Length: 342
Ligand SMILES: [Zn+2]
Image 1 (cartoon, rainbow, N blue to C red):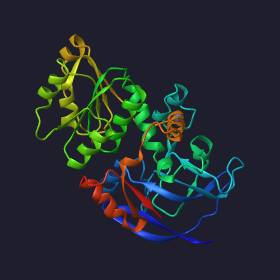
Image 2: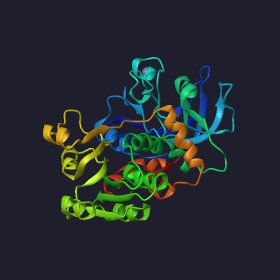
Image 3: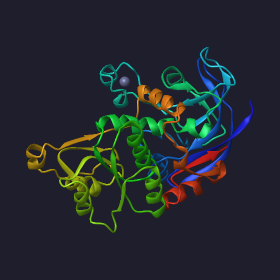
Image 4: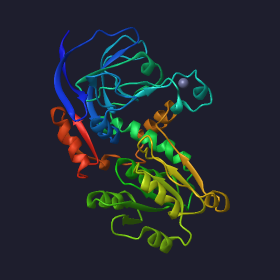
């Protein structure tokens, strides 16, 4: 069997570029030649800390977002030459949560790792639930964005955004920018207040459609938001994953408003919530996590239209061997998402 190159995760801050021997496909599996992989926030977390669910053994395959072409198939539904994207998980469709149609909470989610490589084997669970063909006219970078868009679309629905809402998006990395674009594309007369700090991200937020952009390091956010809407924002999407920001959001929401805590915090974090705010102000707090097959399908459908430009969120292209540099560029705030070309 021929060799291929892959970036392997040996432990926190230890990535190694290695040559691996191809493994044989099992029944119903397919082998995909990766055309583009994308970096994402989870890659950064995993790079620095490892990941209890994604990284099961060391060394481990690394990376979760990609698009490519089938080069070998033992699955009758997929043929050599077809362009495909795969989600990084597959639900079991049998557990309590799957039967409640909340597959993102599946107790037996199967994870797929290894997009930072020249090729990847798509296991049976994912070929069954979450492997999709896309047209050759669509670029691999756009197709690879499916997963990020899917988590945002699930989050968008959980935030119950309506026409004319004043929506505050706190955190303007790839996810925050994607939310800005979704709000503008899917609803009418939305006012977007974006909050960040890096000049590059603030500029991209403006270009993506934010009506107001504030800097949490310089601006008095409560005052600025009150100038736009006397009682606070109608909806807030928290996309930083920082407990102090989670806390601050409660001061920025209007009575009757809703906060979607989209950004996951470290495991033992806590915030304080006043019973008064929840009861007398009718504030709704919710979260949204991950994606499910329905949203992967929805996201791919949107990407096949020209409703949303996601290309501007992919700020750099780099080679697979330079993955570590790409991740550092994201940490510094210079890159939002990097297309990794194998
Ligand atoms: Zn399940």
